[in-house]
Every structure is written in structure tokens, then in C-alpha cells.
Length: 339
Image (cartoon, rainbow, N blue to C red; front, side):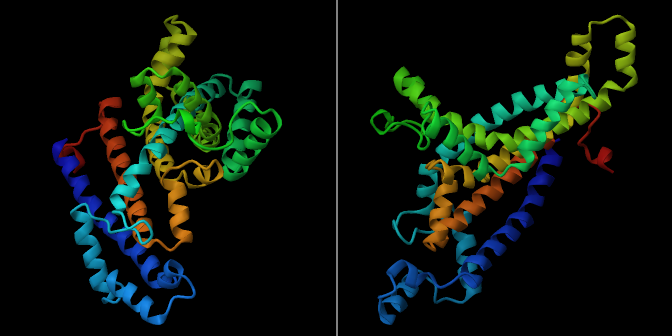
């Protein structure tokens, strides 16, 4: 397995290089000149020229790319045009907010998606199956920004039972710690702040989890239907095992291989794709930060965030492949088996 992991890691290098080339060309070649945006329309040509020289924008494009790659390998993603802080520090300050939201969303999506998918497969062509598929269809079809706005209008605007934005009430915000507010409030025993954090999480978590829940539901149903028609399931039923034992212990356990793949990939997409959700709910994560930086032409930050998202996707793919070995012993990773 070690050889397989090393091989996959080596395969990641050209993927990440391709991502860096694309985002670098978009931000440096196709995007407008950031100097007037950063300095203002009334800045003098001399001031703009000085600013470009200070930020290395006067160098040949290939040299700018090489400098970016060399810095990225060393953990230096550049400096923000506006805050003049290292990009890594800016991202690190906001990543816990995105990670916390994504973790909550994938937990909700996985639990509901697997439950609805199993129910739909067990009750095939019955009311429960039809309802589950309608829920999945709505989740896949409804854009996140639209579902988020509807949730805000209903629960914050009409019912006034949930907050519409932010991570926590400002006066209750924990300082220091890990940046994961749930963990920080639990470690300090601040149950009032914990309740406030959880309340603020409800709407963005639901909005972000809808699409992933729909995908997981459909995959679970498909995988369960295939497993339920297997010979060993018929044998288990013929032996007189309880229906619940057959469906959960035997069928679901063996159907989890493709389901785990979808869950892993969806978690990667949630970490990197919470852009719309964070914007709608004013969630201070890397998604909303990326939108703000695009609008301000703060390209070093945009490059850093895109690179981080690419790395997350690659890592999640690798993790999913490794988990395969534990869920299905028929899968081998040795060089002979691959051949």
C-alpha cells in the first residue's frame, strides 16, 4: 500500500502544477490591471508604476510564475495587496470558520442522505421511495444561494427564530483558541456561547448540506438496490435473519464503498465550495474572503485560496482511495495486483 500511496502523491504534482498555471494566467494575464483598483482611479501613473514594481508585476510573466511556485513550495503564498499581511496568515485566520461549517454540513448530509437512501431502497416504488427521491431532486436542483435566501426569509424574516448571518453574537465570540468556535466554547465550558454558536450554524449548515445530501441519497439508493439483489442477501433472508439485520448489517455495510467515495468527495467540495453559502450568510470563511478579494483584485489571496482548495480535493481523493482497502478487502494495492 505504501508504494501505491507514493505513486498517487507523485501523480498529484502535475495536477497541482496545472491548477497553478491556470489560476496564474487568469489572475495575471486575463484579469484587469490591479493597480488602479488598489490605488484608486485618481492615482498618478508614476504611483501605479512604482506599485507594480514593488509587487513584482513588471517582471516577465514566466518569472512571476516561477517566483510564485518557489514561494508556494516554501509556504509563502505572497502578500495581500490591501492588508499587507502574508496570504497564509490571512487564510489561516479564516479557514477554521469554513472547516467548521463544512464539517457540520457533511455530517448532516451524510446522516440524512444515507438514511433517506436506505429507506428509498428498502421501500422501492412505494411512498417513502417517492418522497425521498423528490427531496433529492429538490436538493440537486435548488441553487445554494436561492435556498439560503429562502431559509433566511422564513426563519429569520418571518418566524424570527434563527439569526440570518454571522458565526456568533459579537459579545459572546470566543477569543484565541483554535478558531473552531464549537470546540473553543466546549473547552472553556461556556455553554451560553456554545448554544449561540450552534444556533448561528443551523441555517448555513442546512443550506450547504442540501446538495450533498441529495447526491448521497441517490448514490445510497442505487448502491443499496444493487446489494439487496445479491445472492448472499437472498441467502441471509432464507436463513431467517431479521429484515433489519439483513438491510443494515449485511446490505448497507457492503454498499458503503461507493457511498464513502461520494461522501469524501463531497466533503472536499464543501471545504472549497462554500463560497455562495458564506456570501449569503455573511460567514467569515475563505469562501466569502475569496469573493471580496476577487472584487478588489487582491490576486495573491485568490491564488492562495484556489491552491488550497486544489490541495484539499487531492488529499480527499487520496484518503478515499486508501479507505477503499478497509471497506473492501478484495481491493489490493500492490504492484502485482495493479498489473
